[in-house]
Image (cartoon, rainbow, N blue to C red; front, side, top):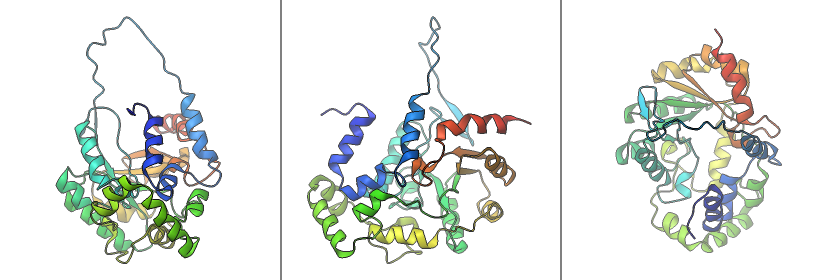
Length: 302
């Protein structure tokens, strides 16, 4: 089958990936109302068509943080991308570079920031606020040393949202040995993925967090570490340490409220990513596209 549309690629991923991975990347929090709202509200966005203008040469390029982009698009961070395809983060970075776009590497990627920088180009780096500020400083220092031009601070995951699909699939560690056996059997039923990732895909450790979670070997280890180490006490005051350690452009990702947007700018952010984490955190929240106009309007006022 020739893949043409987004739905084609989604169906191909469903066939290729074990359930635990497909449900993780495809699913949302709780009953997935916010996830559905993201899709439904975006579908309601309409385009205003004009005709009889010369469009034989169209330039969608923009400049952002000193970088020239072929279009106003950035590949956002995706956790565990290296589990979906061999060195997935490196592949994504190559695709972004070929398209003239930036790639943002997740803290929770399998490929370390150094690997992506060496094999492709220094990526933007996404960071969470963790209880151990020493781990955060180490990650910031590594991203700086690798040449990352922009830091993307995700602020809407103080505690992981409950995702029913991940509980059912065993991603969160619920189900014990039985869930592990089912995952292993499911993996065997996907030979292309098994060969590409598990056999020939290289290290499956979390490259950016090898010093923080050296014993992590499974998806459940990954999820349990997040629940134990992400910091629910973070406030805008934490931006001071991050700004001082980074010294470059910072984007705050996970803003849905106009007051939070203004607070982010006041705390020193150079930009805002209006996002509800893909509907994966607070179920029942406003869609990202619905929140965007109000934040743009408020932040553009003097």
